Length: 529
Image 1 (cartoon, helix red, strand yellow):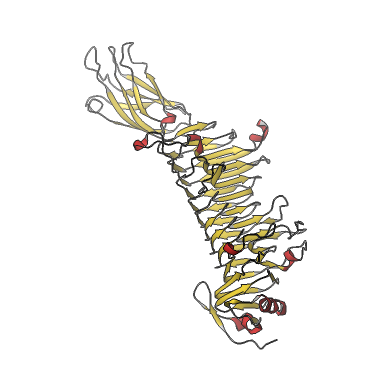
Image 2: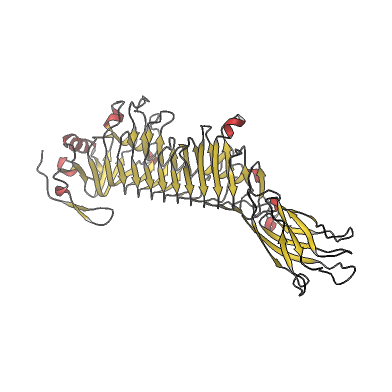
């Protein structure tokens, strides 16, 4: 084995790292084993030789350069792989299973490997010249391990998926143990033929409890981040854009946190056959609540044939499934018919802001899905659509703006800033039979109410407002005069009879100094609850 040379590199935080001082472990420079890094010579053999020679705990170092490979690099477990402006590039027409994968995956073992650590490396799949990857192949990096880290890496032009955490080996045999607590942080992924990051766990429950943080994913032909087994995963600070289909999908979520991610543009595939795309979709299972908080989802909704569902929350039908969805912002690209002279061919049903649904088919099972959806803001969508939501779903204080209509069955006090939730109005008990018909312009949250006091005006209740959708409990209601008549001195107006179903506006004195008064009184109202 060649004698190692003292060397340092700069880590992602800009600090010098002396490779020969890493806890007395060795480092191995691939160029010491014959790798050239000129982008022309085949460096597969020298790289693999360096890895095979390394002892546990060693660091494999790639100096600056482009390292061309024609075979999948078999990663030895227990090693660290470190680059410095270094690219591992797939040779033309090599059509690999992956650029790099753990040995256990390639050798079809059924036990997860010890950790692998990958830092500051670029993986170029050369997809323009590798158009026929093998079945389940064409990936960038495949790990079947626990406690592995991928930090500060760049993946580009990958024929299929950039990063795969797999619960099965290359021939599909499922692991006998678990692949847990893996981390992807500060990675850049662009231009893939399938997913950006794929946690592959169709039904085994082996690939759980990991972190995907502060990554940028764009230009994927399918979903940017797809977590099939979301139990225990933490997704935060990721920026996803330019996806042909969906943005982020997390299935089988249990004690999962999806916080502060941005999906900025998805569903760009213009084919008429694309039926459905989701900006952020979460399917929840089990009583340990999943948190979906502070995410931003937006897209221009370019394909008129596609159903865009920006935020989708699904109860998986398990006992006491729980989810908290709070503080998310949704901005669609829906243009209603006739708006600003534009004609929109897309149906309103094809632009949904928030979808809350249950996979269960029995009423008793639906009641096992507990969801709190609160303080979210939705704008620019065709409708906010709640389909098959459980009676235990709480919809509270969500603000829905723009040209949308509200649809669906929801069972508690959700109140929208839309024309679809218009409160009703009727004469109060003090009005005479000839009172002018009262009117209202607004909804369950805010608006303007106008009324007259008739020919037998007297003090007391003048008009009643009933919410289109009752609150869970009595809200707070504030009114203020909206015209000169309502603001006249000598008459005191106040809110009375507040319940979860509505409220009344009353006067402490007769609002009319005459026997007959057709004056119109107008008030703005604001409901908080």
